[in-house]
Length: 361
Image 1 (cartoon, rainbow, N blue to C red):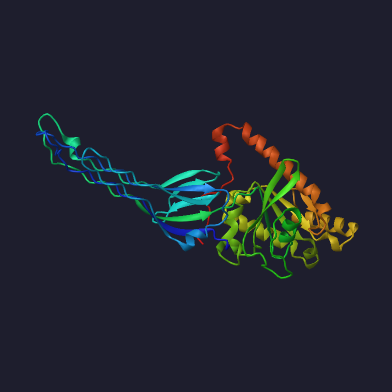
Image 2: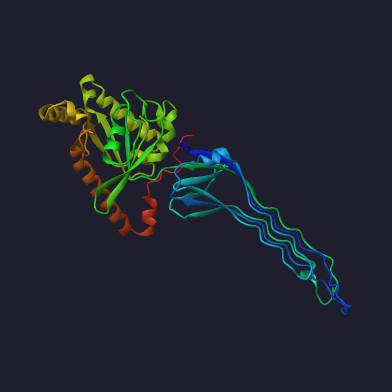
């Protein structure tokens, strides 16, 4: 199925049913009085996060979704049936916006989260409601109110613990395939990855994290150049970034410039994203001997004045990745423990969401 992370749709809640005007007509009951029942409430439209979904493709095929109208009231004080609610399943990580105002309606970040997006109409009242000691035969009823109609924009931000960023052909897809069950497209030319790819990395018994690979970034990505700008939102929820670098590019003098360029693109897209922990992963060491790798590593760190962790790996040699993956798991566990120990208000401020920092695409 095609990966779709944006969709526009229209939702229409059901109208409320009308109240009934009726009087009792029974044998031997000469003064039966009013018995018109109320209408039923209209159905509402809800969105529900479903962990079995990973794309908004269905909402590119169908764009209008309606809930059921409430039934009209009837005689003998019979109330109209309530309209059936409409539930729309969406992937976990979906944000819902009002198209007219771009207001964020809700963010579905956990499986089973439910969001009301269109309220059903309220039921009308039958004439039995208006009976009083001074008005024994009321002929007044009310109509049900219209259901809410809204134009919505859905945006999917993948939920992953660690994100891979880097230039095209840095070996990100090969690394993802080596450490997880994901099978991204791999080839020896740029931009083989056209959509984000997510894999689950197992580090040990009951220890795992999710890893997302983005299309390669190039200069101007935050303004729409290349492919990466469309998918930068998918690493806004990550807690750690692996900046993958082709070790052989240093011989061409491009490593420092490329690393700084990607850091600038992340900052321009989202200041919060630029502050996320970022580890330097020097890839493709399989073509060099140990001495050459150590020499290049030291020169790159010195050129960049890099202060964070640095790892030398080969995506085609899984043994070289164990230290990187183990340290990443320890980092995520430590951060999770820290967040759980924080007060709720501080925890909310430290959530890695980056809301409001997206560029329009």
